[in-house]
Length: 283
Length: 334
Image (cartoon, rainbow over all chains, first blue to last red; front, side, top):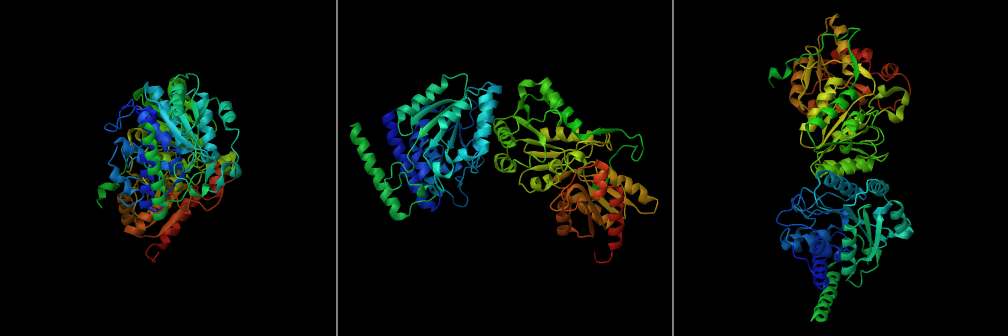
């Protein structure tokens, strides 16, 4: 696929955010803050970084995106639809009977989904397994695992990190959505995680911190990881939960709640205004 | 139900003999792994710091690049296995059943069964016959927690050779499989001619008054009880129901129709175990009186295997008593 520039990614991420709001409104349940916060990272991955082919989702040498924090799947579905994996119209089936877009992703439901996730902590181990298989088979694809920060409470995460470090899985890039919220509140109140960078370094990861809304920083970090051969890479992406929708930003109460009709209109209004501004800047 | 379902298979001629050969079931696993490693480059083996006692060590020595030491981290081990399988490998997860699938059941449920990842889970050290290690290490719940998962095959081979065959069959089967084995040396009931097919129960002994439907090494005690009861004129069929899921309903119903009374036998909790699976089949299709032999809703304890099987009622005497009881109940409205 043709790589989008940082400026084009801004528009693509805006489209993805609008898709997310429309999906959640239609579904009447689901998570708002995380998906909106990760829209820039997902746009960058699918439209600049990942080696993938929506027409051939089982291509052996593809890069694999493994979503460990399954609850932010609206952003994955919206991005995949934007990339051409399935018609955008299907996004409206999210969480409905007969859908391929389950409330948490199911690998068998939809071509292009690499794994099933939902119960936190499981996807990272799956990604580690895929990285091992890739090493055994000498395939060139890279594994990108997406984790949430609340997910770092799980012991399994640290088991997987320890193993990845031990085995120097340099074909593995983990991207942490560091948005500081989880369902019950702020991460540092629920179960303090900091100093995260030090922890990952102590677990033998190459750690890069980025602004998760800065396309160039995300691109540079992903490319830097390609040059690290002795360690797996952890990219801590600092994101704003609910990013792009003023009244959702930074508020943990939007972690697991969808917008109602009025709120969705307000959100779409915010996003369309933002889109106009982006286009204005580009002209 | 055709009678051909109840054709007996050939088993050892030394049943009950003092010199019957004994080998641990886990040895069969270890040998099968090496065989598989030679035949199929996609076979990989994982262990959580238990390579020696699960017998994965021989594979490790021969194929070090395909062996993964995960450390004492069973949740991660199951997840890594799922990832390997989703990428086309055939991973064998080797640990004690109390830890795997005991400790990592959620990973088994979502990363493996729900995802239909082609992972094979070998649960060692099952049953009270684990012995001196005590209750914490005696897996008595693994059949219950695996057979409840959709899309997961559950096997309980009865001896060394059958464990070897079950391991080979699990590798050939496309989809997740759980199978369990025990620690101690156990009598070799089967021979190379006995055969093994997933989902096909085996008549180890013909009979017409009662059928013992069981699995695992403890089945030997049923054969001994049957021989003893034959002297009293009681004809006992012994059905090796090695596949708990998908269960061989046809053979179970045919055996119940022929005998009219059933004793279930397992080295596992009676609640929700292999016997319960048999009862599910019978109550839906052909209800007959059933007595259930197994762990009576209790944890184990330290002791010698034979002492424990006696104390908790899974030895020859307990099986005999259950047979006599169920025969008495026949024709008395259960």
